[in-house]
Length: 258
Ligand code: SAM
Image (tube, rainbow, N blue to C red; front, side, top):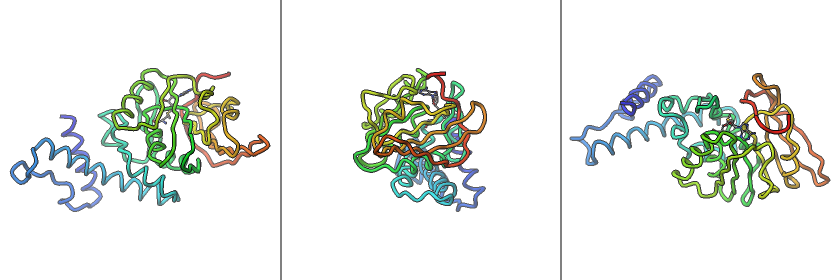
């Protein structure tokens, strides 16, 4: 029943945007050489792929994201598989969605922006604090030649994200259940660190675990309100340059030194 609901929703969304009916009509068993169940699945995935393409064009490229690898990753990762089943029909809207335990999967544009700001290149190691659904980690995992480490503090989310990423074949993503405020010292230094929950100050352990020339992207501000997205770049002398990238709204970073 849920699968049928998703198909109906997707059909309505696509129709409402004036797509040709032929793009979304479900082939009948009589007209298709593949079994009906497989055919329905393929049609559903094709409809999601079309919504994903529109999301990238209309909310990510149009707002100035140009990094080819980031755009390719946003086109490649099936965001609907990272949200609860009853949210799948909304997976390609440009907004956060609930993933349980009071947490959210971030807005696609913000995921793309933060990933672009990391300026990733082949051979880099990246730490993500706040695995959540695993979607941001998967986007990082799509960038060629990047080793990804990701930490989640809520045990249930850490477990489900690990299982999801494994089932989708992301072998270069290493997951850990822990307090990410303290980073992952065994794998430091990191060329890039992305924090997807907001602390009220920049965690010193994360600054310490950034390599020379390393980039950190992190929202900082009071819990429950708006925060500032900062990009930090570590200089050869150990000093850190800070760049204000604008206002954002993230769930709070818990744990750490208060
Ligand atoms: N990046 C995630 C995704 O793609 O789905 C969304 C992250 S959600 C906005 C923030 C996540 O950070 C939540 O899952 C939350 O439990 C986690 N979190 C909060 N404080 C944390 C901490 N100290 N260490 C690790 N994870 C933390």
